Length: 167
Image (cartoon, rainbow, N blue to C red; front, side, top):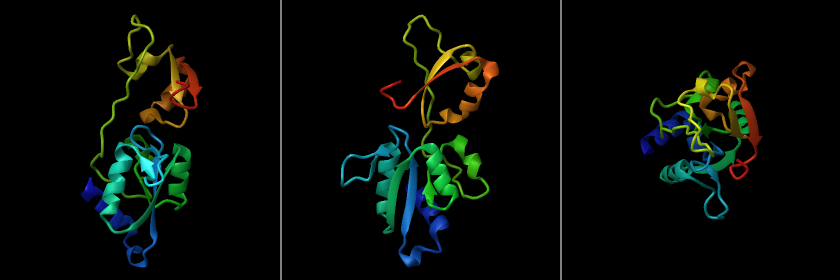
């Protein structure tokens, strides 16, 4: 991870390193990987966020890390308000023409399905969601499944909530 950060920092920030500017870092609000911290001494918390803080701390660069919902994160990056982001693989295609990305993933995630009923057969692929009811937490891309879930021909009933507690 440390070498990945160094490569990306140097590529993205090579012209400004001598100017001692602050590296503007944006992370997707994605618990437990990255979320806002309530502690004053720790700007962000989460599995990836804390590793990133540790790695950036070794660079000697000034940096500012903030957590954003997906749309704002991508808008800020596209408009050059952020120098560095860590998107999911499904989101990389949005920026393939304007950014440099590592071929190596930082972490591999699995999307899991849960049911209140023991008798409910859990879906093993996206087609198994057809005709079912799902709860979605606002702000997540669901690894590219949102377009499929939103497609009316798949007859998926959606319940959208604002946070994990409401889900």
